[in-house]
Length: 539
Image 1: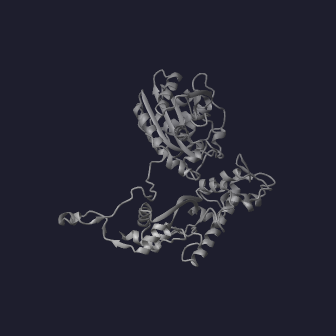
Image 2: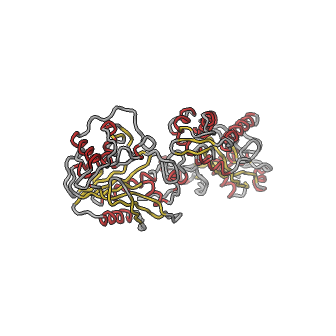
Image 3: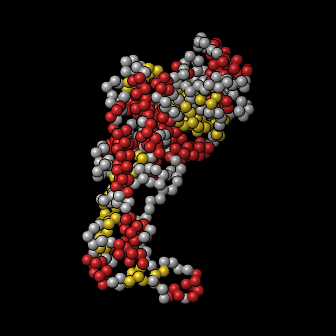
């Protein structure tokens, strides 16, 4: 019998009594894995090999997971620092505990998010209380990470004494970049770890789950007979070349057969992130509705962020608990006459019936710089004429930009998110115009059930919140805030016409269009990568 060279090599390497995984068979036959796989299926189709399949799940530590094996999970470090600071007896200032825990950058958000989830304590109004009965020393997620490292070390030891393969064919090898993997079953593995714990570690991007099909090979009776009778290597050609065509040899050679149904390696191409898709769609829709885009600084004077919006300086939203103040020199370049008019509106009000706030107003506070809590700071810059000069109605402007708020993390709140800002300046605008704009806008995304609820804002009157119905849960979730700018906002800016305005949440729009039930699945350290990879590409 004559067979192509790869088939002959595989046939000679296969056993009639022991099942051999294809990857090990490829190594013994000195073939590339994909070449060996093709040869195996061709020999199976000819009845010379038997192939069995089994499903395996392997877990691999990510770079972040490897760091936490040594340093400890952020929430455990936070808990221990809280205990040391006396938070088990009385609430302690959160910033003090964070500093003592030596948490850096994203670790702070991770620690805070998981601290409450695991029942280590409570966080409220900037203070942290620790549960003295919590068992952080036996944290199941930390234990699972340690178990994975032990399983990898054990498998590496087995490999060194078994020519690179464990006796049962399972893998627990260190990869080229130092990551570790271990089968979900077997001695010294993750078999005893709860699946929910592993799922949580995967969602936290501390582990990567690899599901694969392992195919093992044995010689069939026909294969044994063929080897006993003798198998020779046939001369085959795997491609048609110009030389074969010009010489005419193509008519006499035997071409290698290809199995187009054989498994191929999974290839994941890049794709635009769900939020970026939604943002670009929002921009297209608003430009199509006649709007122009605004842009401006992420860090700005409190004057533009809040004072121009007739937000009193002693408003709770302007305390250090809710805003991210920056330790930098105050802004000097503010229009002096506008500062005077805004201060007058705060102190004395606007118009005959205006009364102001009768609360402290400090120009130093107005000039202090913070990360913007909303993109309405851009609207103030544009309406005042500071950015593009004096505007004559009708005008329509929008932005889709990031904002920053010291909120409590949950399924619908993040510390930084994207806001869809917009406003229209025209004669004789009404709430009816504003509601009609929202109906037209959300219809472009297939959202027709938009509901409105009266609301209070210091800067708009009348005001109302918007709610949309989640396609999966059926729950109404808040998707925005809106209203007509008050005279106390417009008159200091020199605007003599009606202005309707809104701030909508991009992430919540994405939740409605994708069906995501948790905003943290879309972006951040806890993002659901499988959800993002499988999300439908929309436009």
